[in-house]
Length: 140
Image (cartoon, rainbow, N blue to C red; front, side, top):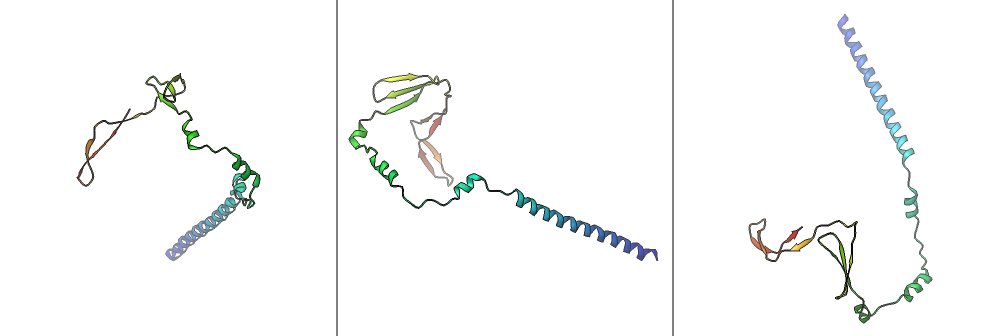
């Protein structure tokens, strides 16, 4: 007589645990939904970006663009060309045109990687086993 009663008590205890777990899961889901709706906001930057564009053309801006100076090919060819050359000691040298050079030392400049092309081609093998010749670069 004790065995059927003990089995019922065990099943009743298991049922209570399952009901309590189910109630906990439902409460957790409801809390998560409520919490996510309260914390989800759209930032002011995104709201500003989401505003519709103005379909009207601003004539003043178009007129200012038309008034800008346009350079011809001959005028462009007379502009000086400046080059910045990094020295081995970390200083920068600005070369103006093809003649004079002005030396500028830059304490903030750090030496960076310089790519020097290899004078001779190096033979390499590709993945399919064929030999090819290519120029490589040396990174210093």
